[in-house]
Image 1 (cartoon, helix red, strand yellow):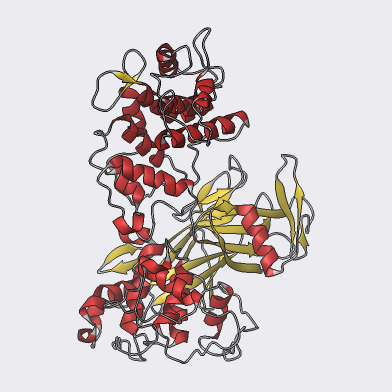
Image 2: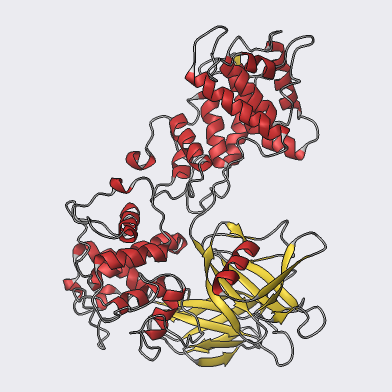
Length: 632
């Protein structure tokens, strides 16, 4: 439904309930369902105040979904504003009005209480005055048989509200009367369904609401979460970096949306790296040994520690966390060996001169620039990182007292910057950090063959040049060669730049018979295979053969960790019969995210890829993976 409608719903309640159902069923982030942002659509819906309490409360529940906020979305409504509006709608008698009415309604009041319940029940030991007035009003509406105007659906909504407030529905009754829970159960029919009115027939809406109410009550009785406590985990991958006292232990990717420790242990198991754990004084499991390096290796309080580098900058330290660290999409989990004085490298800034003015951010190709490096630790951050060794393309420099190193210009691309603070016989002064420095290629207009670029590929190729994903097509930097076929080695090397997957470790063994480490593409393909970007795990890679659209789709889906939605029949091409399931799934994913598109009902899976086509694919993936880069 979501994909067929492209997220368009005339009624707010249809949009918000569909969003809630999608999240409750375990769907991926509501901010990106094949490019559809349901959160933003809901928060910008024009009928926000026109569908009564049902619309406001369901919109509020969408606004509070775990990890649902998009920092790039501009929304008219947001959680606090909705919550405030719900509170302001309360009438003097404690109730909330039904849609189009000035009188209080049982179901509207119950819905409002559901919205208020997480706030009042977690932060207060007794109901707030507004909640208590609403409860008093509800009890005044209740009949001696426990019902509310004889409606099963109304009773069910009240039970959900009471359970959310952590109030026992089996005890909610007028003096001398039956409880609302007793009344609900009395409406159950022999076949298991429920009637809406006394002695009435099976009523599907009443049955649905009754079972939701019983589920909410069961959760309350068992001391579990609320019916509206929805989990909407992110999908995709995060980076993991394991740094020992004198060198890197491992570098790779892990699934996002999980506890950092769980992700680390899963990675260590899969990589065959020995480790040990223990339970600390607070009852938390912690790593005590990795790759044979145990806590206390140098004596004292040196040990394995962890921190998470956020997607938009800044470290999250386990010492400062209110609970266990989580790792989300695009973040980096760092496991490092150190002590209380071991620093982490924090903010890094590039400066260069453009038209006589100091510019920050991506330097242009072959333009001198400075790197300023700052430190970060659990108690203080932002101080200059002096005495740190910075390595770019094999060249080493030491940061001065202000944390600065100066560099001559670099070729366009994404360069791995290694920063280390190793010391002999003790823990590092700073944990090693990899930083990915983007150097922009010259603008499209500067190439002699720019007129050969197809109109549809102009934006994609311009962005690919800007973010260092593609360079000149020959030894002559002024030639772009947009129509030239791209090899498999060239494409996977570009993907490695895209995902910032290169590292500074030399991997001796290649999983492919035809990819020796000494070739220009050897290290890139080996590292891409380690990260799961390639379309085959071992055997032959055929690096010099032109890549096909089918192969590009598989690698692109891996690079973007693109999920698929709904049935594969939705993305039906006339020429994909007989392809492997892996290829069909990848083609569905890149099509849904519009990273690659077919023409007139065909995907052309065996057609080879040109440089301008590859640039467009890379640019679309880049916008998906790094939307923050387009806010500049």
